[in-house]
Length: 100
Image: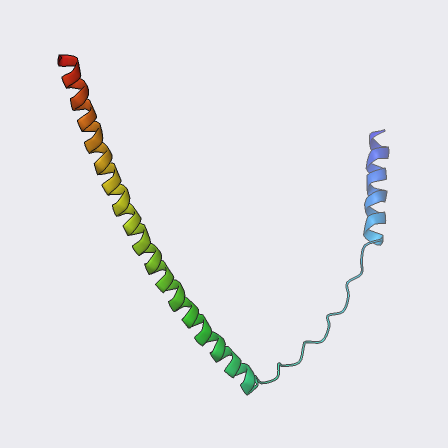
């Protein structure tokens, strides 16, 4: 039984090797690319200018957002200060009511 399994595996491997793909010939190398035309260079320069402009606009928007966040933080700080003062006043009123 053991020899028949080895023989079957050997026959299967030979059959698979015989049915494998044959190596194809390498295709010819591609021709050299044509030189870049002037309109392409101009378009690339224009795209670079547009990208720089977009970058400037994004930086300006980020500065504006940071300024708005600072204003919101200041408003929240003032509201918290007012809430602490109101809580302190309420605690003092409750303490004086308990004493009476």
